[in-house]
Amino acid sequence: TIDDTARIFHTLMTEFLGYSTYAVHGTDWVSAVAYSLYSSFKTTVLAAHFVFLPFVSPSVEEITANTITLSDIQKVTEQRVIEFNAIGNGYLIEQSTKPNDIGLALYNNPVGQLGWIGANIKLWSDSRVGSLPSVLDNTAIVTSVSLDHLTDSFLSSVWIYAQNANTFKTVYTKAPTNVPLLFRQYEYNVSLWPEEYVAKVGNLVS
Image 1 (cartoon, rainbow, N blue to C red):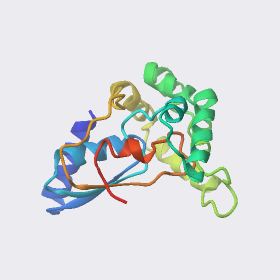
Image 2: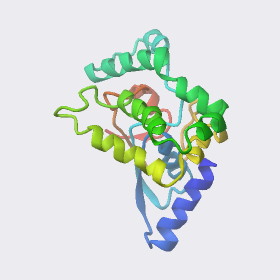
Image 3: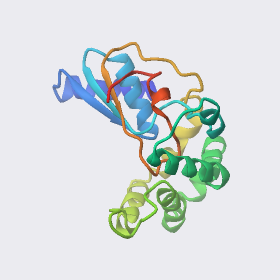
Image 4: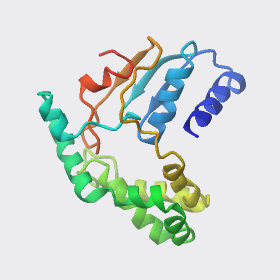
């Protein structure tokens, strides 16, 4: 589980690497691991930085209803959210409900894995991919996908969706710690958390 992974990371940091304190950073699924560390190990985790949260982001309609004013960067993200919800979340449904189907179909298929993972990397990234100032190019995408293929880990990697179906919470709760939480809204993200929502889950500092 996510909490088990956090516990193992904590043991690695404190018992094997010898750190008495440390900071955490998380995005996407690792945001859930980082938040578990932030919530559970408040004497050793001295700061947490996120660009993604393990809480379901508010809908565009909810943000509007709460009269939340978005920055220019957040307005870009809002459009990304709309596009993702319309055409970008098919992989999420497949991996959450039938991980073996896609996992076995693409298990020994490097071109298939490149198509499946690479398309999502491009979807979630700077739309200027391949040209400056974006540092993402085809080499970076192939390198990332190769990690799954060459380690035979594609099948196991998609299972995180099915095994942790309730990780991203719909009810916002505040972590039992006063440790500083920093949040950076990534412009090209496919989820949007205004400051008013981030402040609900931790000791948000700016």
